[in-house]
Image (cartoon, rainbow, N blue to C red; front, side):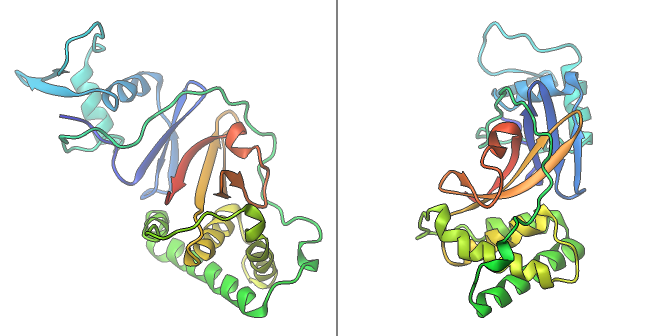
Length: 245
């Protein structure tokens, strides 16, 4: 049997620290060193229950930490592990990598963006995309927003160069100018992702995080490049969420 992380929880390492994003709670958490060690073990191995205790299905030189079963229950209580058992491995893979972090990840509209032109109907589309994002977030929550983006993943998507997204970016920035609420990076990236996915352009809405000081930032990536933001964001921050591809 295998342990899985719940569907609404995303995990990533920033250097040696494990960060969890719970979409239902709309909350980030830095996981303790001990529980991080347990998660690292359980999502990478197969287990079986012997006399009410969890043991590795395959014998090896790895030894389980003390009070392993109690730690499993603690992780389930914190909703960092599913209470179900599965007969297949968790699809995602945790990776540890060195990240330097970023001094400033605040999203800003680039100077001169409003001087560019975009079709009026596209600006209107962008405006309603922002309304859609704010409505989902305020009424249904963060988890529903990401589920909405994930549902857009279908066949026949095409890869587009980031230059192709320029007109969408311009339309969205103009819509932000007229929008009555200040647009933040999450709303901006989500709206752009919806616009790209609507056209069957392959793109991902991503969120990166760092610790000490804690920062989180959202952007859109297409063809392995960040659109209309710092190109080095995926290297400076640890990507905790990347949907739908």
